[in-house]
Image 1 (cartoon, rainbow, N blue to C red):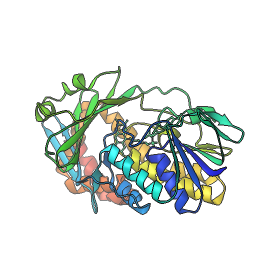
Image 2 (tube, protein in one colour; image 1 turned 90 degrees about the vertical axis):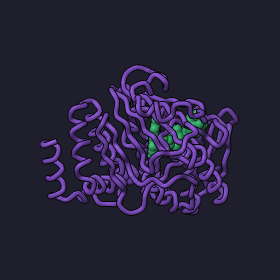
Image 3 (cartoon, helix red, strand yellow; image 1 turned 180 degrees about the vertical axis):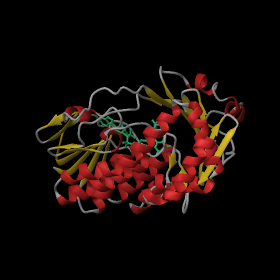
Image 4 (cartoon, protein in one colour; image 1 turned 180 degrees about the horizontal axis):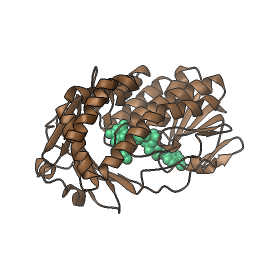
Length: 363
Ligand SMILES: Cc1cc2nc3c(=O)[nH]c(=O)nc-3n(C[C@H](O)[C@H](O)[C@H](O)COP(=O)(O)OP(=O)(O)OC[C@H]3O[C@@H](n4cnc5c(N)ncnc54)[C@H](O)[C@@H]3O)c2cc1C
């Protein structure tokens, strides 16, 4: 019997297992897929995600990201992270780096094992029952552990989807570029000296990458003729709700614990903060504090995501916001610092908030 059985060997599951091992617990991870696991993702790591990975000894290869650039028609606003920057990392590279570290610290990794239900002693799989003291559901957006544990929060009202594709092209920016279109956003992340990933997020019906790219003629032009280096991967609906993040000896982490949207590009950072809080609770042998930590970690990201989703639906207001940020690059940088937790939530200051509000009205 292992101390900890993690269902799902994506970033949430592997980071939790690595931390658990570093804290002296034994940890086993099962995943139905084979590594390195690819996934629909914008592949931009926020500065705090990079720091949290480094804390557990994971340093994936990637391209440094200086900040975020919003492009809305002819309007452009660029903000730089205060302090150290983020990292553009191909998802398979991130996964391979996590797997290497998990192996180094002695996590028991079982690939190609599919969880099929919860059992009295642990988790039932297509290869028998795995017994464990604690079970962690890290099985992503459509978590079945969440359902089996009775933690599903019901269907979500939001119909948002994501799809990504990579192109062999020299990156033209050291920022993540966010292009705003009609009910659709394109995230361009440089992931190496010769490759960029484009992730589309949109509202409404299911759609394909090529159709969505039509909404961004300037971006389409930049990648025209460039070889496509990955198979399209999509996912959705993005919003998934959980009634709670733990019950008895089962805890949820990462997307499995509930997800609002990828529009602010911080899912991985949030996931890594959650895994640290979860392992602290597991070490103490009591999951109760995890729920409070989870709420604290997600409060600001959920607020920012709701705010940006509201702007997505209001193009005129959004253009005012982009104009305001373009006029105040120092305040934009401070906002990014708050977003990436390198500055406290009050980091904008009263005077900064007032100036930004004034720009928004006057823009
Ligand atoms: C379009 C898009 C763009 C994004 N862009 C960014 C970004 O730029 N930056 C950022 O930080 N975040 C971004 N995110 C969010 C980020 O990708 C997720 O938050 C992150 O992948 C969560 O990791 P996870 O480990 O919880 O889930 P996953 O990576 O989905 O891992 C779940 C794992 O569980 C396994 N599994 C599932 N069911 C079972 C089962 N029954 N048995 C065994 N194994 C199972 C799967 O095989 C998978 O490996 C984006 C998300 C989307 C959709």
